[in-house]
Length: 281
Image 1: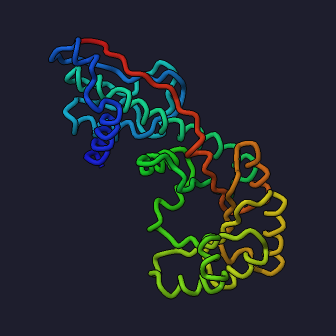
Image 2: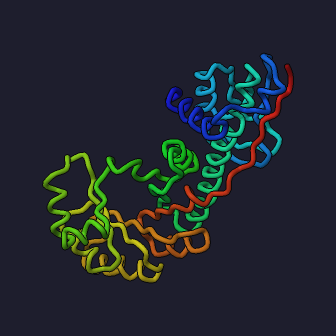
Image 3: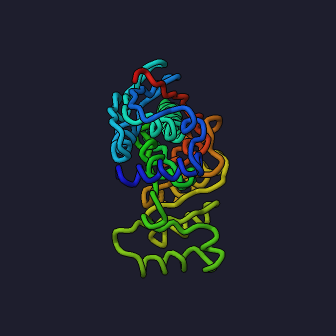
């Protein structure tokens, strides 16, 4: 992991300084400096130790000052690092960009989980596969630190038969039958549905979960009610997704699904502002 994260930072630096940092190269010599990574807003720590280990791979000394999930105030130091000034300055923006995104995901996730649990403590909030490219492992970790479920980490984790799969295969039952006949017992099977009829078909076909997608809270309540009437409610996990935001998530929670998945926490979380300051030579 430290090596992979170090390579990610190098890739970001290549984007930011494809031909080098002309400013630093022009005025900074071969000197050692000490710097501190500071929080400019309050939040909860995430991946600071991971980033510190990656910086060590790149030849810097780095010490994480906050553990995952630990609260911090504006002005608190999050990491101390030292080493070659040119290395620190060229990597500064890439490091801060990644960390500010991750801290934003943690903070937003935590806020939404707390919001939902005030309404319905039994409902899990989950992420989706909608993440910033190349940052998924880190963002999924941030989701977990924020108290939500990571959901699938990739397409390799579980079977999720979506509308496009069904459009090609022809019907829910056949798609489930094919999946059950080919995947290992370790892979759970979930089917995306948008109405009670398809939810009933999927559960009777033996799925582990149904993903009720792009419905209103009222429609979700109606679908769950139909499953309860047929004695199917407890036969599969009921997940809801699609267009869920802080403005409407409580209404979905009141409909009493098992899981609410939303890309809001991974794609629309406001980054937490952080800075890096050189404090001594």
